[in-house]
Image 1 (cartoon, helix red, strand yellow):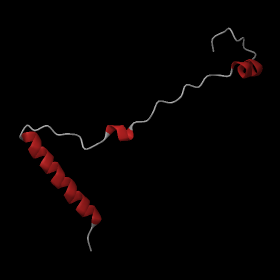
Image 2 (cartoon, rainbow, N blue to C red; image 1 turned 90 degrees about the vertical axis):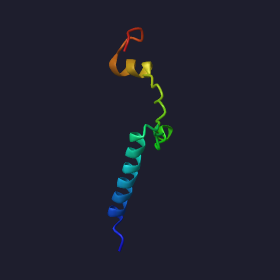
Image 3 (tube, rainbow, N blue to C red; image 1 turned 90 degrees about the horizontal axis):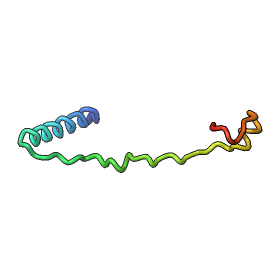
Amino acid sequence: MVDLRETARQNRLANNKRLSELVKDGEIIHSSFNSQASWFPPRPLIEKDKKTMNRLYGMDEEKPT
């Protein structure tokens, strides 16, 4: 039976060896990771409801919160 962990380990070692040979030869290694695939869009700006804040805490709307 094939040990999947050992197979994955051997694949990693072979890939690392290949990459280290490229670096030794001075070649540019292009990223195999797509940075846009892990990009999270910015969160929306959430503003306080000033009427509710005033009702709950008795705050003036002119004062900064």
